[in-house]
Length: 639
Ligand SMILES: [Zn+2]
Image (cartoon, protein in one colour):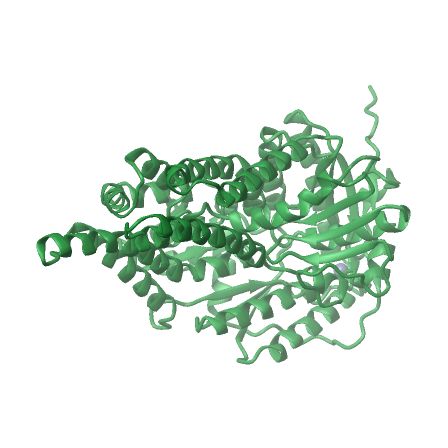
């Protein structure tokens, strides 16, 4: 859309806020966190991949002195504590930093149009809710400032608002204005992009409902990669078109407010580079509905692929005795949830003595859709699944609420004792310390929830295995990189609490923080122990997922997380010419991927998972599909 708008004469800025961006790959241009000009024959396009850490620093730098002053005035913290807390945490949210950066860039008068490519579902919904978080932040600082105001009034009889009050107002105003901007259909359009497949459509309907709850209007849904009518009879294309038709129908009928649905046809070649992207933009501009196809019951077809030729079945390659944690991760839309579900079912069936927990930490929560059951934060057995398999969709905010409640109660107990012993007015301090949890580092809710699960692994007798369906790449990495950050944060918080402790003595609060700290230490140990935990990367035989997967493997290696296998999902297609071209392209991609991995110095086993139509769904089909996974047998080079 951005390329098309720029060619049409609009000065356009294209922004990616995905922490694992593919924008540079799609444009075939190196990008940075400063807008760069993308050469087009006509029109002016600039593109930027936001680095949220730097965006946050940029936003924070001019405000830091005042925020520190507020914190110093309102608490017993000294300068060092405040600096440490601000650096580690405040406002601490990638999504918030991204939104602030979008707003900063969008205000630039050099652009007529700003197009934003966001992170996958769960975290985009969180980003759209961020204006409220900004206003909460304003409240925290307002509480800190309140003590100073009260004191000044007592001493001087009146309070003159100063730079601190101005900044608190600014935060609140910024939050309010961003919230209004997102809800103003005259200036903001939200286009949701989905695939014409049951799981993608289910996720889109969930997202549409979430937007509705936040009163954010959804402009249109783009259904991408529609299968064209084949040029000759092809069972695969026929089945696929039938499935697509059913998926689109459930999209149209499934939401309260029927969204406008725009169709984009699949390309023979991946749409990378300005020219091919412009063609897709032009297709979107026409706003055409997806073409009609014959739906109804769809015949089951498995894709044909030459790549499956020299292969062997995957017997038990993903797990070995002693492994306690297997994480599945990858770019959004590659099918990691389906793979995690199939692998967990298979594992539980093969090893009846193991207790297997299949856990989703992806806030988009597709696991229930893959298994065909309703899942909650409570573990449950699924109908048609092995009795030794339990499944749970982790509710990160619920888990964090529990940590928060424990922390809150400990703070209260501490101040109750403090109040008994002296006449000091501690109401403000109590409020501020309660608020500190609002300044916790990004994703700590996810981490706290994961800790709740991994802690049970530590004390287990070795018969417990957790199979984890993680959030898409960027956020999964954030979670894996977080323990070190949170460790520092807990230490900083502890140092601050010690300043209060001498007055009150004792420390349930310290105990809470020590528990978090120790849990993190154990999680770090577990993640880096190749005998006990491993990461299975899921990808597709296409250029963009390949590039992202190679970057993911590199970062996992830096984190010393063992990757024994990469699953290349949805291999194969039908017999028409278009299908055959696709099969050949897949084959080339697999070879390129193998070269890339070998070049990078690690050699995970390559697992090929066949494409199936309709996509594998529910325990019995998932198990049958899992039996079709193959490992590639390396070709012997002669001569
Ligand atoms: Zn075909």
